[in-house]
Length: 320
Image 1 (tube, rainbow, N blue to C red):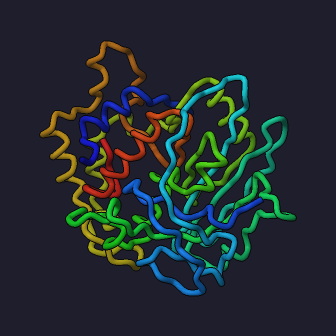
Image 2 (image 1 turned 30 degrees about the vertical axis):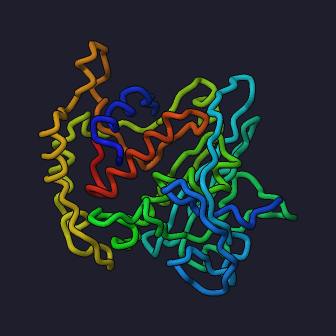
């Protein structure tokens, strides 16, 4: 049963904290079905139905499929977490991966993974130096469209098997990056960053500090000061309401209908005020161009699965 909206809100309520080598076989997603699957042999061509990747474009990223092994989510405050950054650049929405400002000091950087369908970026951004993955440098990996039954159920508007708009495909890596073995094995904390962002110093130091302070789901508050209805109104333009956007076809994203369904289910803006806690006026609406997740906590996986399900079922925009 997919996560419900009620469950999604409950996960948010219990988790949200707001604040302003062998690489072959490690860069493909894990099926959402969580059932074992046979390994896919490297291929020199593209075959999305069998989940193989172009070995001639990026031989370092051809991976076998499998399930995400159960992990012990234990936070040890005496051990510095491994901090990573993940992004996706699909098509030409952005021309380049943005240069990373030099990070200095004790927390000088972590691994940075960029998933893309562009051969020029795969060629230009290879952070493996002498067989070692270098920190604080973009390492580009081939975008891989999930095609297993857990992600491509009939009737879901934004199934990646049917909605192949680059904006939707990037959402998979934004919400399900933990299913990439390379990330699951190397990262304790992951910051999703939209490809439009420039990472400045001391970004990695700030993420490490948040993690050591036991913060999770770190985001920016939105300028609309928690007014979800205003954000819905502002979403009535071609990016969501059009049958195509930025040169690619897409299903119309019914943001108004989605918000009406949430409201009918009981959602209200500032719903968390009913708990008796006092929050700042900015709470209630958040900008997710940058989100920090602590993968050492089980609730993070609950949140990301619920978030992905809302994207599949409803729209690529509002998630209440």
